[in-house]
Image (cartoon, rainbow over all chains, first blue to last red; front, side):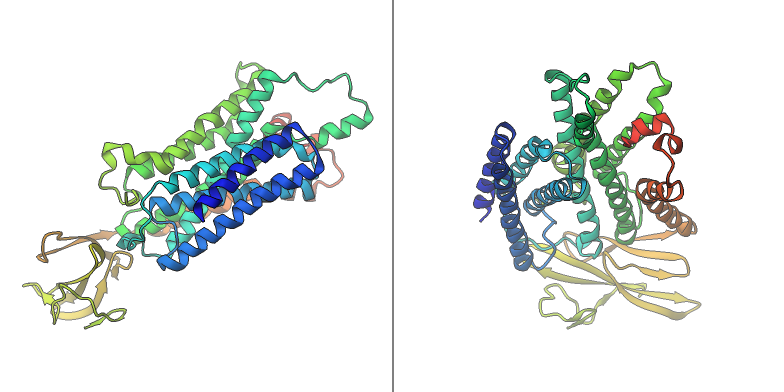
Length: 291
Length: 143
C-alpha cells in the first residue's frame, strides 16, 4: 500500500511537469487527479495505521514521515482547489509547485519505506490528548511552509531565467490577466501567513503540554531550541518587508532577499523535524522519536 | 489488582499492596508491557499537621496539585524498583504565562486574518492606497 502511494506520487510529479510544458485542460485535471489519488491512498495508510496502533499515528519516525507526506499533499491540494475555484487565477501558475510538493511528499513516503514499522507502545510522555493537537498544528504548518519554500524556488528561478513579463504589452485586457496571474512571491507570502500562525500555536500547545507532563514550559531541549529558531526565522521573514524600505538595499533586490530567506528557513524546519537524530546532544531528549 | 484506570492484569513488578516507602509518603507502582516501559506511576500522599489531606496516583501526564505546589512524575529507577523520580514545582506566575500564550495566539490570528478583514469592512469604498501605506502594500502583496 505504501509502495503504491509512493508510485502514485511519482506519477503525479511527472504529470505536473508534463502539465507545465503542455498546458491542456485535460492534463490539468489528470495531474490533479493523480496527486489526489496519491493523497487518498496516503489517507488510507494513515487511517489503517491508526486502527492498528490504537494511538494517533504520529509518534515514531515511520508514522511521522507518512503523516507529513499526507499533510503536504492535503495542503497543496487545498491550495490548488482554492486557486482554481475561489481566487480564479491562471490555473497553470501553480503547476510546477505541484511537482515540487509532489517531490517532497514522495520523499517522505520513500523515507518511511526503509524504516522499521513495528508498532510501539507510546512512551508515557506522549500519552496525552495534546499529542494530536500539537502534532497536527506542526504538520499543517510545515506543509504550508514547504509551499512557501517551493514558491520561493520557483520565484528565484523565474527571476533568473525568465525575463520579466513584458510591460509594454499592458493593454486593458492583459492588465486584468496580469492581475489574475499569481506572482510566486505573493504565493509564498500567503503560504507563510497560513503556516506561521499554526507554527505559533504548535509551539504554544507544545509548551503547555510540556508543563503538564514534565513540569516546565521550556526545557531547552534541542528540538525546542530548533523549533524556536525556525519560528524566529519566519518571524524575520514577516517583519523584513516593513524594515527593508528603511535600509539601503536596492528595491529590485528586496523580493529576492525575502525568497532567499525562505530558502534558508525551510531547511531549518526540516532539520528540526528530522535532522536532530544526528546531534550528539539529543540522546536523552523526549522529542526524539524511537529509532 | 485494581489500578487507577480499572483492572490491570499485567502488573509484573506490582507490589500488592503498593510498596510504601519508609516515610510513608509515596509508593511506586510498576507496570510492564513487552520490552518497553508503558507507564510509571507513584501514589502520593500529602500529610499536613499529621493528617492525610490528599492521596493521588500520579503518572507522567497527570500530576498532583496541592496548594500551589505541583508534583510531577519525572523518572523511575531503570534497574529495579527502589525509587521514583518526582519533580516539584511552584509557579505563582502561571496565570501570567498562560495569559501571554493566549494573547500571542489571539494576536497572531488577529493580525493575519481579522485586521485586514476589518479594515476592508470599515473603509469600504476607499481605494487601497488610502487605507494602506506603500510599504504595507508591498509587504503584504495587496492588490
